Amino acid sequence: MGASDSLSGSWTGRYDYDNPAFGLPVSFDAVLTETGGTLRGEIVEPNTFRQEATDTLMAVLNGTRSGSSVSFVKIYTDFEPSEHPHYDGQVNSTATRITGRWHFPTHPGVKGTFLFARTSQAAARRKATATAALELDVTR
Image 1 (cartoon, one colour):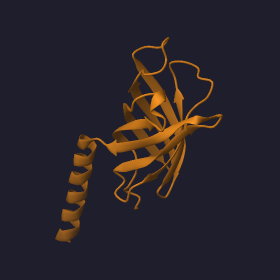
Image 2 (image 1 turned 120 degrees about the vertical axis):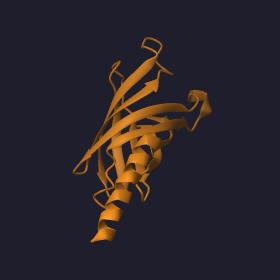
Image 3 (image 1 turned 135 degrees about the horizontal axis):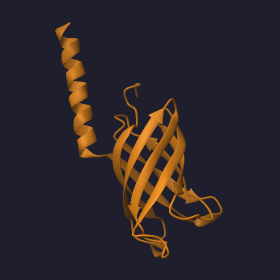
């Protein structure tokens, strides 16, 4: 992966529970910013587990990226949870998908898988930029 394979941009995704009794898969939207190995972001998802909160939950993401590995903590901002979920994943070779696992450190039974995928608009912009760069190289 080159320097152009930044994770910055718009993403959509979902997380699943290993134990379906904890809940159905949850879809979310995210905006990520990668700066020199630091990964930050904002996530918006439907509220599926906090009765006292609003219909939509907001969270911030703080973590790191090293090569194809990412690690981050998701911190919900609408309420004060007793613990934050930890995510560990892998970025694919084109930096268009991030897949991995999440868990709560002190609640070993509450865990599952996750997927981030670049939104089609972001992917289209990225392809257009790569095509333009390729055309510039060809004309030299």
